[in-house]
Image 1 (cartoon, rainbow, N blue to C red):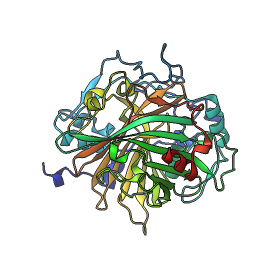
Image 2 (cartoon, one colour):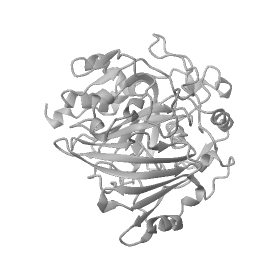
Image 3 (cartoon, rainbow, N blue to C red):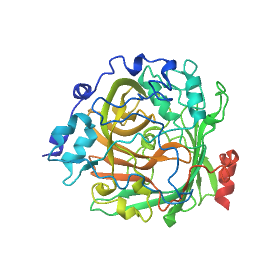
Image 4 (cartoon, one colour):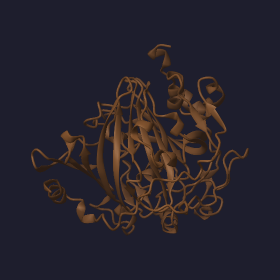
Length: 448
């Protein structure tokens, strides 16, 4: 099939695939949280045919013998897959796949999705649950998605629109103080790849602030210091995410020994050093102020999504085990059937937009996008993203094991957040502090 022939579906077909909520979760109220709904707003009950189980609290206890700094233990490693979705049977399962997933299977010989029993493994602390309930009726957004009030938990466990769902993801908990050594691999035509390695340090003051105290403050703070390859060692980027504005970024350039504001490190500007395969606001599936899109909550549906992906971070796994020619190693990917919220972002008139439309599939148990389909200005499917989650019980929260960014025109992809042999710490209060996140601190760190 030609490249043109492989391009697929517009708005009408997308809508046809969605399942309407029929007054279910949308008709709920705060009293249902912790009852018929989980404490963060997911449906507690499983589905009618038993392929999605009830939520019972998640895997909030670490595996016996595991400690921070160890490679992850896959608690479901002994399970056998239920079936495989591939080119031979895709029509049977297409109603439970995104268009990006369908395209990957049709486009690449050998691409498959191994489906396993569903485990609703994600859970959070009681403080997150209490703050989430307190946000009901109190959290507020501007028309552009700026957070005007609300703190400490998910803002809108009973969402009324797509903008509120996206706000839930912007404030999803993944640890208060975090430090990781991460690898990002850019696949080349022919199966080779190059790797950027660095140390990521982050702090989420959103989970320490008083409700309503948002003016002039930052909800998240992030620093990345590159350690490889040699030509880029010592480069630093810091991004601070305000409650009520777009991301603010600074860079430290070792050759200049100075810190500079980086106003273009935002929105759909291509990320340097990644061959124009990803924009800044694609990173972490989506980030930054959502003001350039109109967000529509299309409904909820059951989808086969990447989940319980601890095997990607198991002992002995190398980058070369993950990054293979044309697509990542299918033996390391685990898919399960989960309910997701479907949110469509359409570029607002008057804004220059690389992507005319984005469709996010957002896991109900985490408010985190697990799949995203991105369309070009002619409404043709262009890019596809997957976020493989696992439960970090020590936090507790479900976090990214690895995320993939595919460019369907270039037939290439990026694998990000690769962490080898446990070089991660989601509870890094003893080594991360708020005073690390300033231009002066960047300069001191760069000069050392």
